[in-house]
Figure 1 (tube, rainbow, N blue to C red):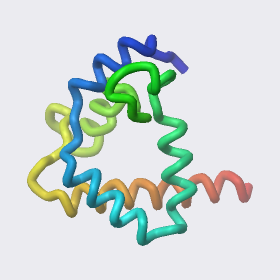
Figure 2: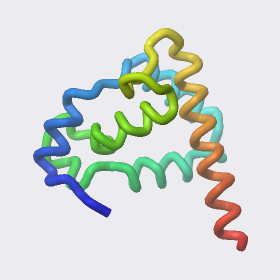
Figure 3: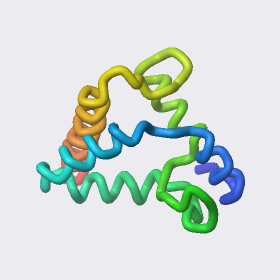
Figure 4: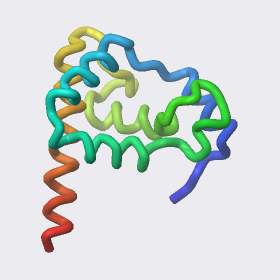
Length: 110
């Protein structure tokens, strides 16, 4: 896996923003789904840029280039999060977490 230098990752991450409403909506929905807490923790830990704590925004975010690529493959276009429907964006994140949990469980049970 290719890792970006920590300062470069932090600089790029600061340019990519997720609407606050989406973050809150994901948090509220996730709080109601304890079965996804462990999966969310694993994904956060696994996708966080290396040494994320050493530079702004001091959050365990994935590198912006990776996030932009994933958004582009999911939504098409320029690789930005659709801002029209906060509820649907939050539901997309929870569907992805559910899919991640099911896939991991399938791999572990083999």
